[in-house]
Structure formats: structure tokens, C-alpha cells
Image (cartoon, rainbow, N blue to C red; front, side, top):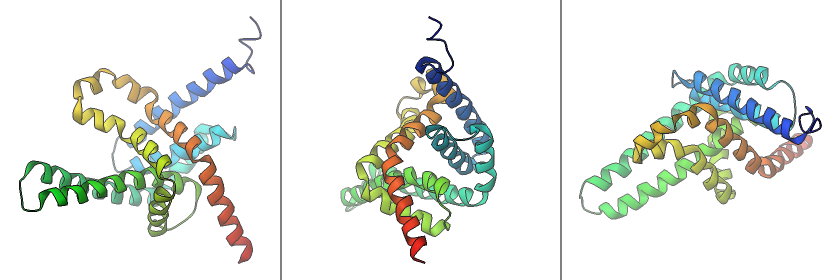
Length: 215
């Protein structure tokens, strides 16, 4: 029995990782309360979660360091993503509720744009957390990566947007399980997303290092 509760045992390491995710989730939620800071909080979450998977450094200090260092650019990216999402989802809602000439075609186009937005948004903050780049290039790379790794991107988008979808479709259930969103969901989604992104990110890092070596 003593071995099970040893700090190096798989059980205790697993519980420690869950505790870290709970704390990181709370930090992310608190830092996202002003809304415009959500991008910096998400970037910091991905930075800390990546370090968690690599057993690297202090997660909490890494979170705050990434939050501060990425604040300006991550906020710009977040505002672009937010406005684009509102415009595209608003278009989908408009074509669903109003009968106009060519409405079905326009609805299909708007739906495709909404899917493109969702998979692109899933890549923006992981890329911001790992690479130094301009806002324009980060967005361009997010689109390219989302298309190149579409199955990964769709899973990531579902994990990211599940709380919002549940809130819109079943608000009562969303509120009843609110402790999940506040307690662990966003960190858990980032954890699974980072595992999905490991091979693609390793490939991107290798490509970046190869380009730098040639320069």
C-alpha cells in the first residue's frame, strides 16, 4: 500500500497532474474575465500545458510569464478571432432565419466559413505559444496548419467549442455542470489538444530550425 501512495507512483503522479490542471484552469478563467484578455490567457495555458507534458519547469510561473510576454500580440489575435467569429456565426444565423433568394447557397458558404474559422481558431493560440511571429503570419500559418491536419483540427475545434455549443443549445445543462467548466474543462481540452499537436508541432519546429540553419 505504501508504494501506491508514494509521490513517484503512477497514481500520485496522475493526481498531481489533475491538480495542476485544476489550478491552471482556474488561472485561465480568472485571467479571461475581462474578455479582451482571453487570448493571452489561452496562450499562457497552452504554454504551461506543453511544459506539463514535457515535465519542464514551474507551470504556474510559466503561465504568468507567457501571459505577460504574449499579452499584446495574443490580445490582437483574440480580437480578430472574436470579431470574425461573430460575423460568420451572425451570417449563418441570418441565412437560417430569413428567406432570401439564393439563401441555401449563401448558408452553405457561411457554414463552410464558420468551420474554417473554428479549425483556424483552434491553431492560433498553440502557435502563438510556441513560435515568435507576426499577427499576420500566425493567422496565415493557423489556416495552413488547420487544413494540413484537418482531422486533428476538427477534434480540437469540438473540444474548444463544446461549452459554447452546449450553452446555446442546452443552457440549463450548461449551468448544471458549470463546475466542470470552472474546475477543469479548459485545461483538460488544452491537454488533449497539446497531445494531438505533438507530432505536427515537432515537425513545424524542425522545419523552422532547418530554415534558420540555412540562413
